[in-house]
Length: 227
Length: 310
Ligand SMILES: Nc1ncnc2c1ncn2[C@@H]1O[C@H](COP(=O)(O)OP(=O)(O)OP(=O)(O)O)[C@@H](O)[C@H]1O
Ligand SMILES: [Mg+2]
Image 1 (cartoon, chains in turn cyan, blue):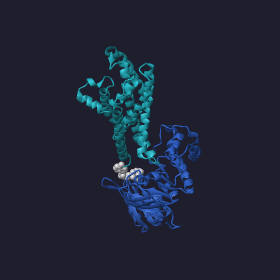
Image 2 (cartoon, each protein chain N blue to C red):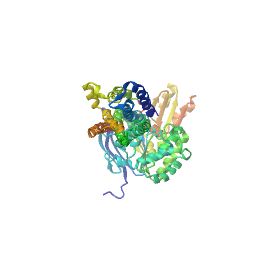
Image 3 (cartoon, rainbow over the protein chains, first blue to last red):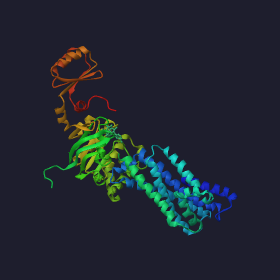
Image 4 (spheres, chains in turn red, blue):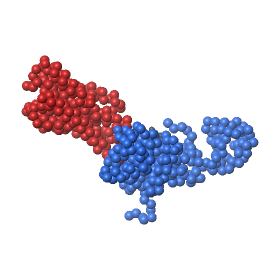
């Protein structure tokens, strides 16, 4: 519920309230601009939450993973399963947002359906990162650092609320080096009927982060559980 | 080529070693366990029992020596080996998100069992573990004994050839413990090989064909329980509680007292007959004593010492 509720609040309150002042952004109403950012953020948050709090519970508190490892299942499969599940959670919340956004007239055409695979990939990427964090977590408190020091600044700087070209060059490069910017760069044109560009590079960044974090997380979790 | 009359070895280790830091928690273990054997592993807290069992199934890296299960070397073949092993871990790790039945079916899925196989096997296992009425209960609604029985049922979902039980009855009441014993005996009759760790000597004595006593990662003794008692210790024990020094020193004069030990205010005298000592006690006014045949616990204490661990 939290996964759906918060994005809607942001979309409606900011979109309506701020939209009055802001007017048009990149040729879109502010709410239409904001919708794709909020949608991607929701994919990030759903996958991160599942990959941190829920996965940690299964890894440490409930020892579910050790139970699974008493069967022919391997660590790689356990971790990949968690990543798939967390990305599925992203897909669910993004689907809900997309339906509401369509109702609000914020979606241009059927190309918007391609948002779903992009959101799933975004979920895979952030789930892998979250599991990497989980692999070194000593308690739930640890996740607050990741959220406060990484996720929140990234959301603020990646073009969710405003286009990043108003930012200093250095900060722009920082934003472009993080995965969320690339997810938004794909989702926004798909949602608003804009022109897609740099599709392969954007997808590559998301995949690169996902695969690297996923492999690293697997090896760290293996060291942690099989010791 | 295998000689036809040689028994099948389920587990075989040579100088198997596990170190944490500089300490060898399992120290050059040489062990072979034959098919159909019910083998008990005893040892004080921290002796290395759980670590040994974890190595058997590839859940703990091996630092030295070699290990094979079903003639397959470990840990390379861990995944294949685990297809034929059932594990009851020391700590329950049932999935609280699922019901009793779902715990069994999800676990079966991890072994790649089809839903038609599970559909026939799960009711059997629920019956075997007397949990038919609890099929749809959440794990949090089960008692400790039910959880243990479910963990046992879960360990049998893949029809294992080897069942590994790490303290399956710790923390259970006598009824629940005996229920588990009965199940284990049934499994033994079906030809399963079982390895069990326990802190209950009586449990090992009753169930196991063979008892291995571990201490500080080493095997201190390895024999059938009856034989262990005969071989390792005197036939009888006289426990004298809170006695005067004078009386104690007179008891010690009995030449059949082979050795004695003191623990708090209890003195333990070991010997074959101890007739003189008993006479002396009878004549004295002291009546707080116990004369009994030696048991596995006495052997255990002799081999691993009276000191508290950890
Ligand atoms: N992950 C670990 N890191 C460091 N030391 C460990 C680790 N796991 C176990 N040990 C140490 O290894 C030793 C053997 O532990 P193990 O769990 O095998 O004992 P055990 O015989 O099963 O004891 P118990 O009867 O209490 O279950 C103990 O001294 C324990 O502290
Ligand atoms: Mg143990």
